[in-house]
Amino acid sequence: MSAVLWLLIALPLGAGAVLALTGPRRNRLVPAAGATVAAVVLGAAIAAAVTRPVASAPLFAGMEAGLAVDGLSAVMVVTVVAVTLAVLVFATGEFTADENRGRFFGLMLLFAGAMLVTVTATTLPLLLMAWEVMGAASWALIGYWWRQPERAEAADVAFLTTRAADLGLYLAAGAAVAGGVGSLRLDALPHAASPWLHVATAGIVVAALGKSAQLPFSFWLSRAMQGPSPVSALLHSATMVAAGAYLLLRLVPLLDTTRWAGPAVAWAGAVTALALGLVAVAQTDLKQLLAASTSAQIGFMVLAAGSGGVAGGTTQLVAHAATKSGLFLAAGAWLTALGTRQLPALRGAARRYRPVGAAFTVGALTLAGLPPLSLWAAKDEVLAAARTGGTALYAVGLAAAAVAAVYSVKAVRYVTRPLPESPQAGYDTEQRGTRRVARTASAPLFALTLAAAVLGVLALPGPASWLKRLVGTPGEPSPAPWELGLSAGVTFAAAGLAWRSASRPAPVPRAAARAAHGWLYLEQAARTVVARPVLGLARTLAAFDDRVVEGAVRRTARGGLATAGLARRLDDGGIDGAVRAVAASLRRLGRWARRPQTGLLHQYYAQAAVGFLVLVLIVLLVR
Image (cartoon, rainbow, N blue to C red; front, top):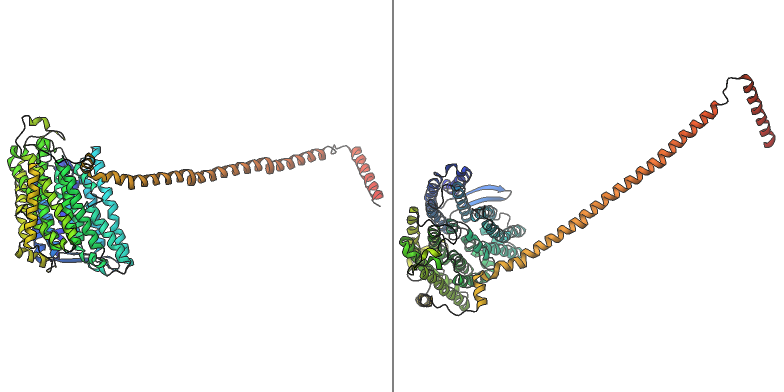
C-alpha cells in the first residue's frame, strides 16, 4: 500500500523538477508530458483514497516523517489532483511557443506535489517542509512573468505576507516540543502541556489564516492576481488558499482543547466572508472580484473549522475548488482572447464566446449559492455548524451568503449583456488579445462546471452521512428544513436585487466604496504598521552599526595607527638616537686615543712623566 503513497508524492515532485529544468528546448513536448503526469497522479490519488495507505521514515531522533491517507485527506488528494489535471490541460493552449513552458508546467507539478505532502503529512516537521516548498513554488508561479517589475513585486508581496504568517508554524513546533510533544505528531498536539498548548495553537491559527488569505492577511491574494490565470485557477481554488482551511479542519481537536481558539477561528472566518464579500462587490476587475470572493468563500471553511463542522467545511472546500477553478479558467480564456479582465469591457463576452460564457454563468450561479447548485447545500452545512456557536455567528454567515449572491450576479450581469456598438474599444487593456479561445479550454471548463453543479449531492442526507463518517464526525449537525428554506430565500432575494439594481447602483458613501475597492486598505495598513517600522528599525540599526559599532572599530584602528606612529617615532628618535650617540662617543674616544700614539719615543716618555705626576698628585691630595 505504501508504494501507492510514495508514487502519489514522488511522481509530481520528480517530474516537476525534471520539467522545470528542461528549459524552452522541449516546449512542444512539455504540455503533453505535464498533463500525462497529472493523469497518472490522479489514478494514484484514487487508488490511495480507496486503499488508505500509511508510510513513515525516520527523520530526527524521536521524530518520524509520517504520511497517511485517512478520510479527510482522501477527499483532498483526489480534489487537488483532479483540479491540477484540469488546469494543466487548459494551460496546454495558453502559452506561446517562445515562453518557457517547462518552467511553468514543472513548477505547477512541484506545487501540486508539495500540496499533496501537506494534506497527507501526519507530523509537523514534514508538514513544515511541504508548506515551505509550496510557498516558494507559489512565489515563482505568481512571478512567472518576472521581467515585468509589477508582477515580480506582486510575487514578493504575496510571498512575504504568507511567509510572515508561516512563522507561526515554527512557533507551534517549538511550543509543542517545550510542551512535551517530542514526536510532533499532529494528533498529539492537543496533549501538549499548558501554557505551551495555547502558544502552539496560536501559531497554527496565524499560519493557517495567513495562507488562506483571511483577515488581516487577505491583501496578498489581490496582488497574486498578477500571475497567469491557470496559476490563479490552481493556487486559489483547491490548493494554496485551501491549505490553511484544511489545516484548521484537520486540527479541530486542537481548537476544541484550547476552548478559545474555536470561537476565534469561527469569527475570523465569518467576518472575512462578509467583509471580503463586500470587497468583491466593489471590484470592476474580474480577477480581483474572483480573488476577493475566494477569501470570502474560504472564510466559510474557516467558519466551519471553528464551529467543529469538519464535514460541512470539507463539502464547501470541494465544491468551491471546482467552482472557482472553472471561473478563473473562464476569466483566463477571455483575457487571452480579448486582452482585458475589466468587467465593463467584458460586456457581452458570454454571448461572443458561448461555451466559455455558459461555463462561467453556471459557475457564477453556483458561487452565488443558488439552489440546487453545490455551494448552496455546502453553505447550509457550514451554517448549521455555525448555529451551534450562537445566533450572531449564524446571522453573519447568512449575511455573507447573501453578499456572495450579489457579487456573483454582478459578474453574470456584465458578461451576459448584449454586445455594445463598439466592443473593440474596450478590449486589450491588459495585453493584445488573440480573439480566439484555445481548443483545449472546453474540456476542462465543462468538467469543472459539471462538478461545480453536482457536488452538492454531498450535502444530501445519504451522502452527507457517509461524508461525516468518512471524516470522523458522525454527530455533526445537519441543516433543518427551515434553514434550507431561509438560506434559499435570502439568496434568491439578494440575487434578484443585485440583478435589478445593476444599472442603478445603490448609493454608497464614496469613502466606503473606495475602501472596498482598495481591499479595505489592508496592504497600506500592513506597510504602515509592519513594513515601515521594520524598515525604519533596520535603517536605525544599520546607522548604529555604521556610526557606533563600525565607528568604534575605525576609531580603534586609527588609535592603533597613532600608537604605532608614536612608537616608531620613539624608536627612531629615542632608542636609535641613543645607540647612535653612544657609537659617536666611542668613535670620538677612539680618535682621541689614537692621537698620543705617534710612534715617537720622546713623546711616550713625556706622556709617562705626566701620567706619573698626575698619580703623585692624586695620592697626595687623597691622603
